[in-house]
Image 1 (spheres, rainbow, N blue to C red):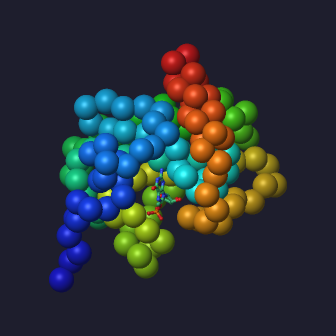
Image 2 (cartoon, rainbow, N blue to C red):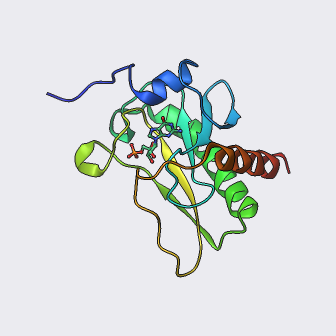
Length: 142
Ligand code: 5GP
């Protein structure tokens, strides 16, 4: 049987304001906040607010509405962190590397020849996350 969405996942709790986050952006349909275990400085997560586990059960209309924000955030992240490139990553189900089961996209600044930190390991200093969220907000405002 296919797995279903469970609204006690960490990101659902962030969306309901039950758990804090370093917020970068929010509108009626989406939110973006810093990943607490960044794979590179400036690693930000972009989520539609609509409930789905991942890409496999998402409403195509939700995806269509989110795509421009993904582009905007990628452009802002490249500028804010003076990156050489951006990795956009998204994992589906445990076998696909997913650990939090509310659809989200990783936007990760990349630098020539620099490997990523491990996925989902090593908590960042909250002050660094707050500063990086500020850099992204400033770049989005340009
Ligand atoms: P996934 O493996 O599901 O694609 O990615 C989940 C991401 O969420 C990981 O990169 C992990 O570091 C991040 N993460 C896990 N728990 C929290 C949390 O409580 N707050 C935030 N902001 N990120 C989290």
